[in-house]
Amino acid sequence: MNSIYHNIKSAAKSKKKLLAVLIDPDKMKLEKVSDFINKANLSIATHIFVGGSTVEEFTTEKVVIEIKKYTKLPVVLFPGDVTQLTEKADGLLFLSLISGRNPEYLVGKHVDAASKLWRTQLEVIPTGYLLIDGKNETAVARISNTSPMATEHIQQIINTAKAGEFLGMKLIYLEAGSGAKQAVDTKIISEVKKRLNIPLIVGGGIRTKQQIENAYKSGADMVVIGTAFEENEHFFEELKK
Ligand code: 1GP
Figure 1 (tube, rainbow, N blue to C red):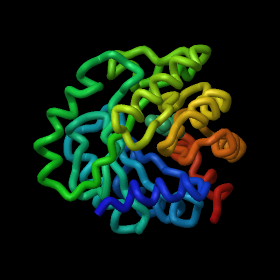
Figure 2: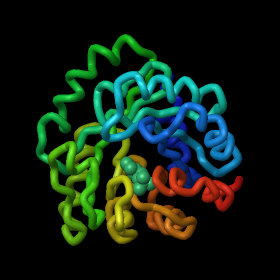
Figure 3: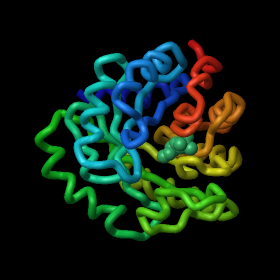
């Protein structure tokens, strides 16, 4: 079954926009999951992503099991590390940090993950992950020990995204970093989108409905939001179905 990617692709084709709610297992108390997920269920959210930069081992699995009790939305791992893999989820963004040059995050962690993955039913979705400067230091940059791409280097960003596509990646994710001061610029989104033949995900620092709409209009097929929901669950009400 490869339904998660198939659905993202057909949504992108028919211009049906997608929204992923990102849950950082380290910041989500188990007893809060039901309430949070029920709010997500009533919103326009289409996916639940689970992951964080630093999560204690086994915490992710517990949170995923709890989430699955309350939703039919696909639960997709967005892991910061191999320890966050769990077969209790439906899928996995197999992220390669192609904006950086740290071999561990380009392919090293993936080798460590491989033997765990082939024993699971997880749908593995190869994803080219580009970290774009969000005007503050983010956990991704710190942990991966890579520098974000400068926002003015648009051509380099386009080339990197396109290289990801040529390498066979199925999604491109433009990331400003969790809690970014500045979300990925709409000009960057539209320039990248123009050249891509695979779906485009955008996340990091998106906090308002207007920003979501701007990202969609510029060509994002899916927007990912974590911090804004963490800090203010009322935001779900603005995004009711
Ligand atoms: C981070 O793109 C995601 O990896 C979401 O970022 O927490 O800023 O919404 P925020």
